[in-house]
Image (cartoon, rainbow, N blue to C red; front, side, top):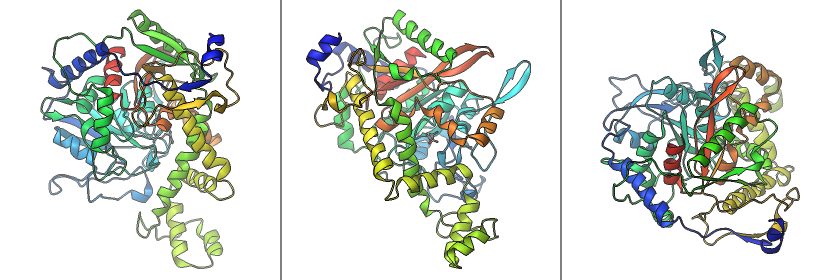
Length: 529
Ligand code: GLN
């Protein structure tokens, strides 16, 4: 194979293939079943919805209900009442959602365990050695995941910038779906890192999520709804173009009741995801899942995504950079609470600013308003965007982001509909670390199959003591989720049982698809779950 690779692949052109007619027929059948199901998973006119507290909500009936705040888990916005509602919340209400509550999160979505919040860490309790032990619920949509896992909500809205819907889903044993970037409206979502932020959905099973995305009964699919209020919402024309390339969003004759067949689908196992930090029990469950798919007729092939190893570092440069710019507006004057009582940092600040009152107000508000993790991200972002560091950090990270995208476009059978023409590149452009020998593996896979996170949910105690010692260590939890975020691809985490010394636990199995292949991703996830 190496010889063939050397001989033929000096220049690689990403695929222009379409799904096969048979695949399309199966998918259309799946969509029809979701849309016209006799017994929809979600009760059409009444289902319980929990909303992550960085998504704006208003009370539909303020006289009768306690007005809802949108706090982002931050002291700065502890009393903030949004004058408008996020489009996604309105869309959910019009489909019968009944809001049961706002859910706790890492401040502004920054974190992986939902412990960086002004309102107390989120936790889930499991029995261990006959004692209830608190475990991390994952982050930053930990509250939303717990609301679903404990059956307080049928559907929960989260946000996924680098894995914040998928990681909590994995830790709590529920399903977490991050759609293609630009599919769901972000109007009313308080931005963390705009080029990465997406709204995601959590539920116990795949089907209710599929019903909302693809449409069910009278309700239109969310996938089709462009929002003029969100400049990153894909335009109706682009949606039509993407859908026509996928040729699968039109429904079809209702003829089969079987689950979506996995036969003839090709799943890629990314070699670079087999890292030393991967817990043996998760590695074992991952191969067991692959073997199960194989027994159901799917083909499993190793693939290489060589830029993966740099993706995490690139993400933690890009996301804080965008965050530092987004959060600059919280000054205690126009945005956020004005903290009037002096804080500890005032003495130092007033000296530095030589009595400029507005500056003191600004510094005081930010010192009291933001938590430590948010301050860390602001400093990190301000540094990587500074003129001295820009070239070495921010611009390098953007280049890595392009390579990550290209890796994905190379392995997927379907072309990326956002590219005007198939992408081509010289092998010599790839990082030096990539040898040709056996590294490439077949391209042309339908989905990637990998774990959602390297470990199961750690104990909350361990998380908190680790945060004290080495706050950056939690970033490692996002290693498998950030690549799809950098590339804007749809990804879903479905529950996967694992056995370790502590007994049976829950972890997540992640499926990643090509851009706008969300419908097929949901169909396959349902069959895999
Ligand atoms: N844990 C990641 C971060 O802190 C992802 C957060 C998210 O997706 N909102 O940036």
